[in-house]
Amino acid sequence: MTSAAYELAQVNIARLKAPLDSPQLKDFVDALDPVNAVADGSDGFVWRLQSDSGNATDVPVFGDEWLVINMSVWRDTNALTAFMYQGQHRELLARRREWFERLQEAMAVLWWVPTGQRPTVAEAESRLLHLRANGPTPYAFTLRTSFPAQGAEPVSFAVPEDLGCSV
View (tube, rainbow, N blue to C red):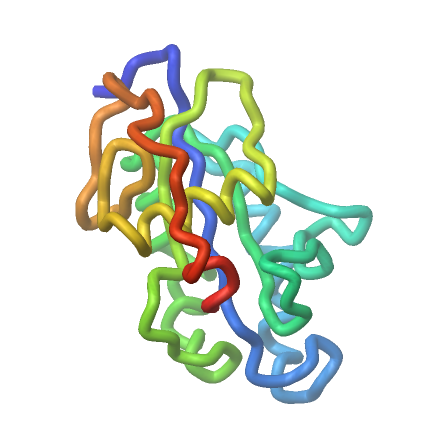
């Protein structure tokens, strides 16, 4: 059980195979609003990053125009996984290789934030780089290797410079 003092932040980043307005990505783009509406109404959902477009596909990440970001805050890992692996989101996950490049490095990371705090893209980039450099830690982890909210204070802010934009 998580402490009410913390909520779970998540980010996942993907490299597009084609421009968002291409026929290849039409099904993905058409599903954004409906899937986001389901997320917004899900038990345990707290917040998600969005621009004026209503989603975050136009929010820059790592200075790479071919990357898209999804960032949200949830009550805990159970709430996040319940949303991720059910309904239309699950269907989209099954088709992700049609729309996104398969990359070797970590493209998703989780971390605990104080209740009410909203993560920034810069923080998400830093957490992802930390995960790549150090593996899962209480500071930056994965669903497969998660940590409780207790002890969520940062263990290190150091990120090797050579990992900067290796996405």
